[in-house]
Image (cartoon, rainbow over all chains, first blue to last red; front, side, top):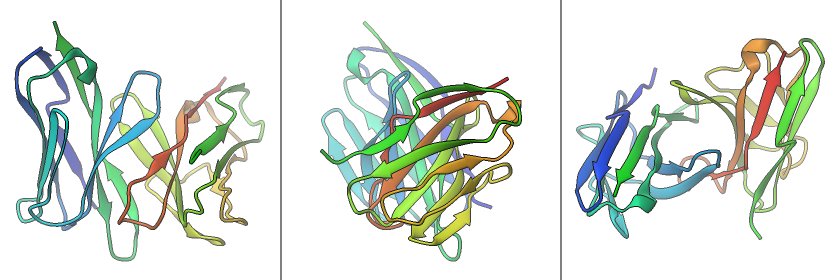
Length: 112
Length: 113
């Protein structure tokens, strides 16, 4: 059974600071996604990582994937208040059962 | 505009009264799925469909049914809703399974009393 663990689950940080959210998963997969959810809203796709070593950047967010370590990171650079949201990683379970398994999410609050 | 549309957005119903939540996408996507989101549990997949007439169970399928008679529609059916099905439901679609991002609907907040 594929388990996806995010750390931390809650993150409060000041504007201008850097931080990293971690996503560990328990079985082999080379397909990992990051989503953002604002309160009361739907999920918005941020990054699609499809191979070992994949790195993608958009603005102040950068995501990477290490399939050997079964680890993805979402790095936040010089946080701003607009980044306050809940961030989910999701891993695609392949081979017979094509399921997408989500982590529990990291609620990020960026304080002025 | 490319989108996934769910209806209704909000629904309060009573235990045992059958209901259907509709989901439609206009992107000609093959893969569609349903999730429920509960506090502290994140999103859990209920059912998914890889194409027309092909559906399979996700992690929490008990109490739910789905059908995929047309590519664009993937309704979620609760034959006899119970209070433990009170949740926020999301429908999602993607071009193919696994290789592309999923697009999510706006969500349906269901309360079963």
